[in-house]
Image (tube, rainbow, N blue to C red; front, side, top):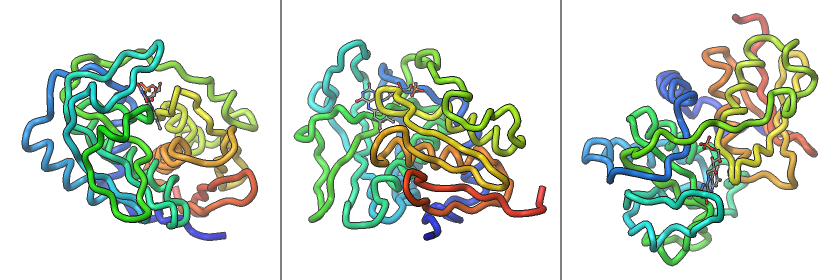
Length: 251
Ligand SMILES: Cc1cc2nc3c(=O)[nH]c(=O)nc-3n(C[C@H](O)[C@H](O)[C@H](O)COP(=O)(O)O)c2cc1C
């Protein structure tokens, strides 16, 4: 089974920074304006740095009404012009999962800079003013800017609903990783991830058919959640999408 491109991709410092941003991150839909110049240049660098194979994150400007579709029961996104287009080349294996990892790394870097973000799948393609190469598609945009709200309360499934066997019996590293996945963002808050633990391995599967951005987001959170415990990730087979394996005998 193939190793995953996420292995060794983020430095220990980046991993620590992203992990520290996980608990405070919420989707923000009301903004007070665009980020300042310094934050923008930091995020331009991040967009280039975090792109896994088959992924491109391109920063753009748009009026909110031109870019975002209105969804029932969800506050509209307003107050920032800034977004990152999450662009995928489907010819590259696992590119959509990679896009979830890379986009979420961008989100957590923005959160670490004190900015608000919101993943948006309900956007108008005509509102994205980023040129595309042949074979590329925009799979989502990430709105970002100065937060004008602290974000809503976190509604999540219980760990026991997404984990088997009962996670209260898991070692701390596996429990922490599962908790880090539990608080990750997902489209329509569906939380489609499932985790199973045995021995040194935590397996990630999807409760829905196929694996998309949500699963990539969960994969990054899974990896961050084990902290500095040495581990590697390999792609799975059948229903298992990927598995995280901790190294034997260390910590
Ligand atoms: C791939 C993806 C697509 C999303 N699309 C939208 C969207 O179109 N509009 C929106 O308002 N929120 C969208 N969200 C935000 C989710 O609704 C939000 O992550 C979820 O409700 C959990 O809330 P939290 O991010 O505050 O923890 C999306 C999230 C993800 C991960």
